[in-house]
Length: 116
Image (cartoon, rainbow, N blue to C red; front, top):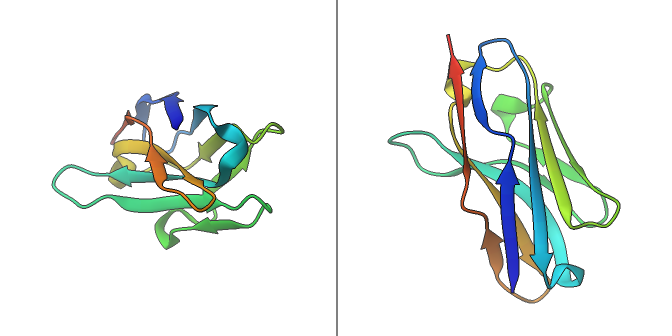
């Protein structure tokens, strides 16, 4: 079992920046990939950024160039730094973690609201 807790959300003005953190606990030694997804009101959840255990990163097109995903040295934390925020970045941001040969775990999510 892996538990994920996000922090760092809130209200941000357009053009601003934010940093989200996610702390994993439990069977963290089994975690491989970690990442972030988001869900805007009335829309499906979409992947924002992912990072493999080997350090490869993937970003959805709409955030590429203004987003950085990183992981802590202990591999039980993952961060998301976003800049040049837009109102369309508003949504609930979820941390996710994949366990080797196991399921994907999700955090409960943190609200990010970008005001115009």
